[in-house]
Amino acid sequence: MKIAGMIMAATAALSIAGTSALAQQTRTGMVTRIDRISGTISIKDMPDGTTGANAGAATEEFKIQDGARLNVLHAGDRVTFAVSDTAGTKTITKIDKTDAVTKIDKK
Image: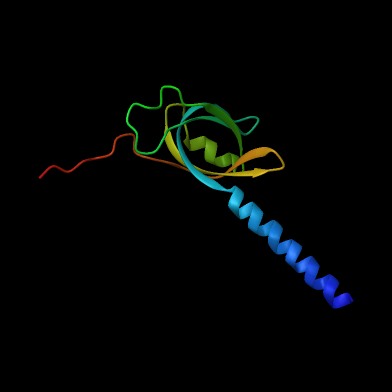
């Protein structure tokens, strides 16, 4: 009976770990506002691969896991970021600046 209980507990733990991994998603956007005191950042979603389609994109506010990362970011920066949604709080777990313009080589 104890072994069955241990197996069920292990299965539940793996299920929870898998759920949190699935909840994390990588996105692209533009920083619109930074609040370094509260550790939050607002980012306007940028659709992948669509030029000029960001006019109606939504802006969302996120908590940031590592507040020190906010020191290198400014409004207007384009970023790629990973978001984890835990208990209804959207938290950025990774954020990096990206190039604003993609270089196209012409031959």
